[in-house]
Length: 106
Length: 465
View 1 (cartoon, rainbow over the protein chains, first blue to last red):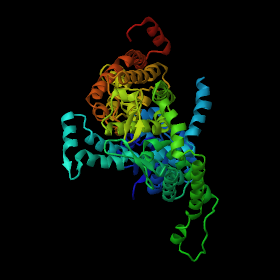
View 2 (cartoon, rainbow over the protein chains, first blue to last red):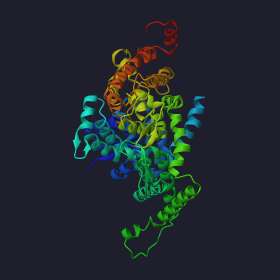
View 3 (spheres, rainbow over the protein chains, first blue to last red):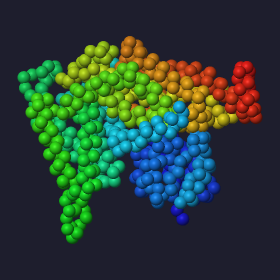
View 4 (cartoon, one colour):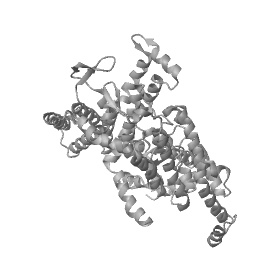
């Protein structure tokens, strides 16, 4: 079975890609079955259409985008926020666990 | 106060940032970036900062024109038309954001812009003096470049808004069900296009009747010039240095917000510097005395996009490289050491979220002080160095904001700016040091299991933890 997708969103798609890679690596090392992609807000809608993620996670520095994404996609894709310190520590394991919790919250 | 900030002020700002005009502005301007950057490279080739090479480039003939003219051809079709990309991009982004196909709106934006632009200009002879003739029925590139930037934004939003309104109200030509959907779609843009073009053409005629020339010239004179003037002084320096860090202090990506609003004006400033640089007239005196570029008079600016990207937010918002050095080489607490190792790679590419959230700087009263003060001092110093001619004006080139320091300085202003970047970044270490050391002590004490009361006592006595 193909991996389930998790999409992370931040302002410019730069720092989020570092975290996405760590989460992706952690998932693959532990055979958790998730692929993680990080994008800029401007690419968010097209990536969501392309990847059909099981969860959308919003970076803390753009937490104001949460309402926008939740309104647009919340009824079919659960949307969550990434915790500040976990983001700062680039903690792939914890953010992946948080994303899975968001996925299962549906 | 803090509560009010988090519960009232920030949500209000965020609501504003999330509005469709702001989203369209931010996303629409992104389309012009690749052209600005590629155009910059050709501008630098045409006007190389080393005299021997620049003489060779202007002296080498390729057919009837010099090699410099060949390079300028690429610059003229990219950087010099940035308002054209802006108007298409903004109308497109607005319509896409509303959930409709954006290209028809983008093209309609361009059409409206062309209608509102002047279609004649005075003719110059080879030496740049006016001759007694006027070229009619032409597109004047200058008004599709930096000088048309504010008009492009307003027109892009107007077209995006009206076009989307028509589609939302479903005021489109309806065809019988037997017509294939692809065919039917090609008529979608018809009614909004007709209405927008009629309105814009009427506006052109009325402005002409009132003897005001064209809308783009009016907006340039009454709105854009005052705004550019304001950004290009201490007001501009204060806005681009203090506000991004102020927002970041509360964990909000202030650089995106302020950059989104100030970007078009800073770009307009940079484009004038680029045009002057292309005419080989970019000197300190061009900051105060207008120079003539192909018959258009313009002044150079101190505060441009590169001023912000390469001297204020370089190594990450807050010029945090100094703090990163401390974490890497001098920190005693585990937390700081870990963040230092995590941050040094991203810092080279001007990304510092790990540092801001991990140390953290965000909501940390101690580190917020140098975080806000350092960029302001750096901005003030850079401003004065250019104003007094110790550094030349920035050449208007645009590089991606992720370009590593020193190299980016070299591209946007020559070797003097590379040296200045190095000095500036080294100086930030001293500004962050005392605050970082104090915070490091607190963290170390916590890691050693001291209680908050004991830590406070240590701090009061100034004793080593």
